Image (cartoon, rainbow, N blue to C red):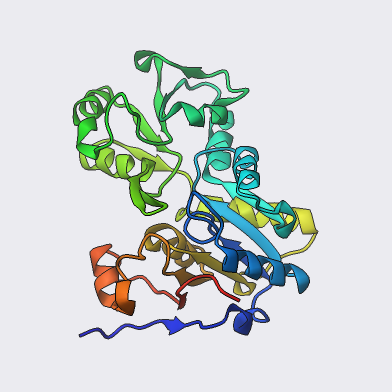
Length: 288
């Protein structure tokens, strides 16, 4: 038996007058890694018509420029948004602020663009002070346990682990893939020190809000911001941390959990070890 049931949102337009700014997740809400969700694009078009501010906040460990290029390949119209911020942007800002440190990149080669114009990066782990993790690598393996031995070596030499994508998993089409957040969690479990950039950590929200306010030359009240996402641990928990309302989208990483419309939120929260989390609203998919 379940007790907890957030408010179900049938039509997004019913709350469009309540908020002025929308912090919307990308993967699992706007697209699934392979194609755009048509109904989500309708929502963005309608918000644009009524002059609402739309900000895409992604835990992609890439620069916003790279993510925009990816979105263009999906035929996404960038005119529909006012701002795009990534965890990669915030991570890069951290690297710039720490010019005295040498960083080692753990992640696939496709993420190398994050380090463009960065000089304090090395391919030699022994020469580094800290590790920037953007994801799993084929050379080590696709299972988290494959990293046990190298992680223990790094922890022994007291190397900090910087996670550029706090997401633990992502849904690519119908497949679930591990992300940098899963490696960071394992590194911490083994006794290592981890620093995260991206959702649910407050810095990315602060950075986003200040950047938007600068762009529009106006102050945004938190009560006028709605966060939309498909991940309890990042999108919804991040909204709670930043004290803004949230809308959970069910057809992202939890689509199999809610198969046959079995809306057991108590079980979902418990399985994610997030029993104290508050979900303000939920919608099956982002739909106007």
